[in-house]
Image 1: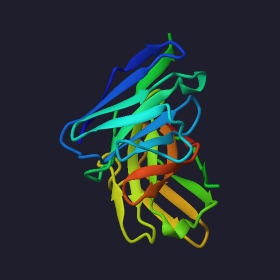
Image 2 (image 1 turned 30 degrees about the vertical axis):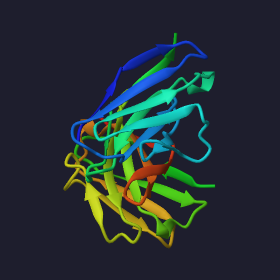
Image 3 (image 1 turned 180 degrees about the vertical axis):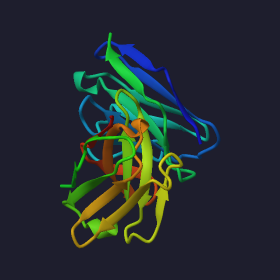
Length: 107
Length: 118
């Protein structure tokens, strides 16, 4: 299953909303996770089951969607949220597949 | 807390071998499946291999099948990746990650850089 994220780069001002998209090449139901990765750091799990926040993840992060279209929304960007975000499907494996990532940068 | 620490990376010539290790702590290692995920410089995440909690099942990406071997030693709380016949396009940071029921990757290590170059 091919995962496609858009846009590649998103320029957002602090305090604004960010909306990131992820599309699957075939239906994956709600078998989708989102990760955040900052430079030089390991990825961190944000969302699983398309919409369930992982432990310790702030409420400003929310996930939605099902089948082939998914969205990660950051309601009000804070400085620590500028990072690269990846989606990943776990409906059909192996392989477990990731999108190519969306970089959220400061506008 | 969960801690995963990779080691064993370095510079290696094409065609040679290297073994990565991932030392796990803070959880019952023998109860969890584990994965290796790599990231080429400036690129995205690329799943490499998986092994079930007891080592009974292993899975590989097509790009590494027949060259890489994932194993684990539950008595030492350590995951391994034996990489043979290395190629330039294997150059990447290799992360180990803890599996959640063959689904998402719950916890990740910082990674170990492997550079394949002559």
